[in-house]
Amino acid sequence: MSIKKNGRILFEQMKTKRILVGISGASGAPIAIQLLKRLKEMETVETHLLLTRGAELTISQETAYSAEQVKSLADVCYDIGEIGQCPASGSFPMDAMIVVPCSMKTVAGIVSGYSDNLLLRAADVTIKEARPLILVPRESPLSPIHLRNLQELSIMGVRIVPPMISFYQNYTTIEEWTNNFVERLLEVVGLKNEMKSWSGM
Image (cartoon, rainbow, N blue to C red; front, side, top):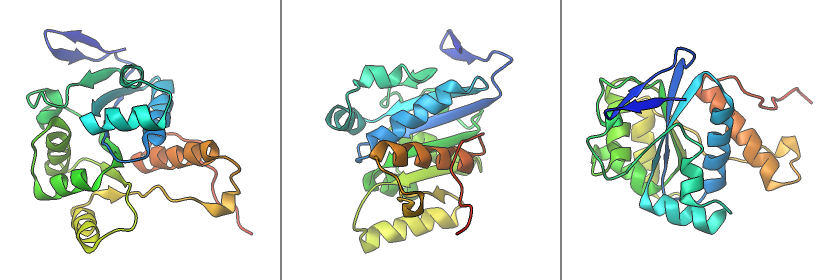
């Protein structure tokens, strides 16, 4: 566990990875919750969390979790409005940032550098520091504006990972698909995972 002292985060020696998870108000809260659960299982990972106000509403609509229960899955949680917190600075080490689900409003804010909350500022910092940034955009159909914004981010090196169903896995429940998609995210960010890979026909 991390220890907060005088507003600063102190690492235990066993923690070797620091991952920032941002949750926007787009549909797909169960994916974010499963990701947080998996990260919590990893003893070498310290999870930092940012929840938008919209995310708190979506969580209440799509899951049986409260916002406080979701926050408890992370080691450190920040207030989205406190723009001066640690993730707002490039001097604060972070190994990767995942925004899941990522609304088109959040995509637009990131691509334009419009950092009016801590999630957007943290994403801006992640890009400028050339750290891995993974977005899970949740929208359909995609407008020309959405596609242009996502393309611009991809050109910058941001990984765009839409929550696509792998039909060849023959899932029987949405939970099975959610779990395997989260394993895919872990693979993208370079963490040990249990993703069911394609074994040929």
